[in-house]
Length: 336
Image (cartoon, rainbow, N blue to C red; front, side):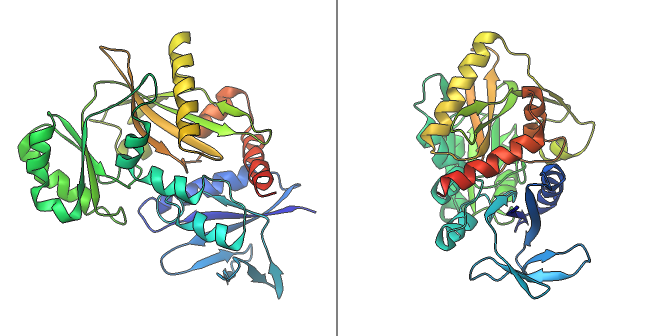
């Protein structure tokens, strides 16, 4: 009997469009001999599945089931590809825990924690060979005094970004103090990002992104790193999703020592945060010091054909279909 997979897509933020593309690619790679895949859209308005005939079927939220042609469909596993809320911040994970439905991502606690960039940095800051940029975490209650606090504690230039956002939405590089208030407003007002803002001192160096996952056998696999080189001021939303603005090199040109050091750091991050499934860690390699600086962790990384993780899976010598199968198998084993 085939495994019934709920492929969860959509979401409540501007990252929904990326999520739809990720879900389409994952579905194209899943083995149809082994899996029955049902794309499920979750939006603020409704939760639903659209069948091959174009008929829309609402999700029964009591047990996350569908009724299709008078037949009740219950799922064996949820494959979550929502970037941002509610699929990456622990909300869906908590719901799935309550109805006892296995899922492919990190737990509710880990997902909620890692969506908060400031809190994540606080937990990771003492990992050997990992560095974190000086930063200030601002809350809505202190919004009017935010610029003054940043000026007192940090040195220009700054990165200003929503503390719980993704895809570089609401992010600004600030070179002068005059630019700071507008950048703070942009980050605070980014849709569904929690009204918290993280301001960090800028780190000059090469930028990398690297995936890691735990396979069905329980082994931690670190994928080859990708180096990101962009013609933009930084790796912003346009650089990520407009072709031609960014060069992505997989595998990245790192020495053997740098590769080993990065792999050890990323494994420690994964274990420290009690991650599950696949995650992606973004970091800088500072030019003058050769130090790895943590940027952020993504627990639901993009899964289009051009996204970092599929690139790295191919560079590792693995087929995407086998990779996604490993994630599903690991999620099912975790539920036993």
